[in-house]
Length: 108
Image (tube, rainbow, N blue to C red; front, top):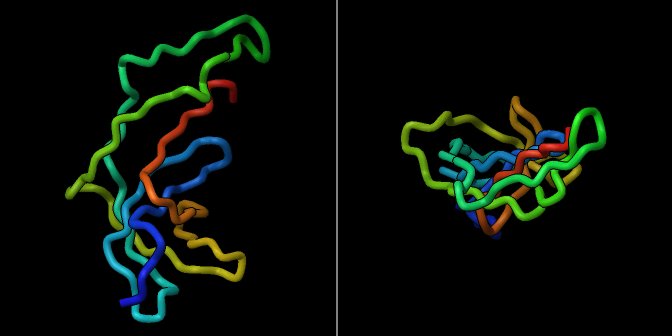
């Protein structure tokens, strides 16, 4: 089995990020099987909105905190490494990361 530098393949969808974990790696290292993870916004973090943009802007969105955990029942799919160095699934581009990451762009 080919080793990746991390066990997570976070999905970058424009400005939002969704956590996925790597379940398996092909012998060539060009195909991975990934599974979605459970995510919920940490209730200790509260967005601070102020007037601007379309309606309002979130001034502290870079401080978001998410609670992320493995989901054995999560959606599983394949992602394939392309010439750009990223893995791509039917949902888009996945970046291999050391930690699972979630982010919601409140300003979009």
